[in-house]
Length: 459
Image 1 (tube, rainbow, N blue to C red):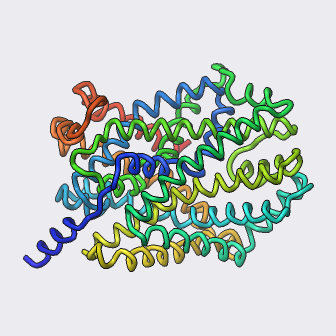
Image 2 (tube, rainbow, N blue to C red; image 1 turned 90 degrees about the vertical axis):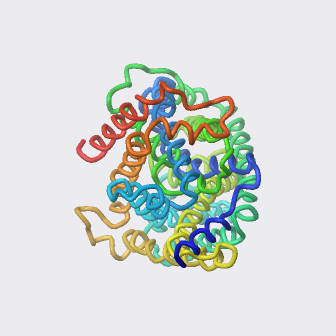
Image 3 (tube, rainbow, N blue to C red; image 1 turned 120 degrees about the vertical axis):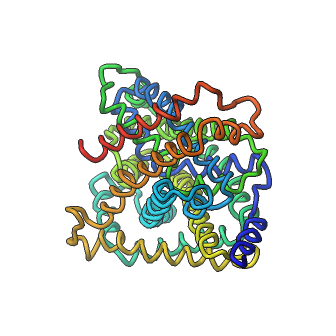
């Protein structure tokens, strides 16, 4: 009896978003992260520009929006974080794996994500101090390679990032998470919009726009479709725990279908905007953009270092990247601290600060695997991969995909489509889940996820 009373008390004290716009900005800030900036623009150009964009939008609408609605609804219905929430919703051990996989995958990603944000912060400082002025691509590449293996510097900047995250999340959902999102989201968009205008006015920028946006349907293939599916998973934040937790703070009359649709399109819009900054600038100075770390930490700094006013542009760019990365990390921190409070039945009004700093400590401890894998422990291999790569590959290719698949199947076949429709449409206005969604949730979305699972691990 005492355990049940404690649980009810904890749930009763669960926070709620203060405003609808605050929730939308927080959810969009969570979805918009580093993947929108360094991965989405490049694969769009690689797979046919506007032609690939059409494929991506189709996947986002058919799979991304339904999956996000499913996850946010599970959070709202459970009023708890993924592991405890799944236990509340079902006693079936298999269905409970959805929350467990989401928790593990989200934690693994967060553990190396803070390391990368530390590098971004270091780059912002480097541009502020003029470190890159006059340096070419080769020199900047060597500079990043040195930073990559410098464990001490990485840890210093990562700790600064973790302290920022702890201070924000410890302030609470409304005063911390939501308050920051209301400022960060508009600022981030304004920064990148201004940079895009500048970038597109550079001499030779037209070639970059052509590479990025000109439709080339000859480049569309099965690989392009798989790339679009994978990008939707990584970009909008399916199966990583934070969407579930953010959904758990929604009131019962929140309009999930409309708000999540807005969030997905805001996420896609920002990714497009990032490309309008990157490709015109890169082609204007004659640098062929690449993907991954190379684009963010080597190519773009060399572009800014060689263009007129590049120091200022570089500062603004990396501040924008830092904001995007931090707002996603805020969601990860909230997801982990909320999970700790729910798992240990803490009093949210008293123990939030304790849970937040505990989550920061856990993240820091796990991050050491990735940090050391870039330096003194690079020789240690797990299944043929260094520890950083292992965390990245296993979380993205296994845990996230399985979490999304199980959540979708659980909603369609255990909760049942009729009940899900009633739940999610409570508070819905213009956009609602209709009967034609049933084959989408039951068959089409799971089929797309399975294709992604097979492609990601066997091809």
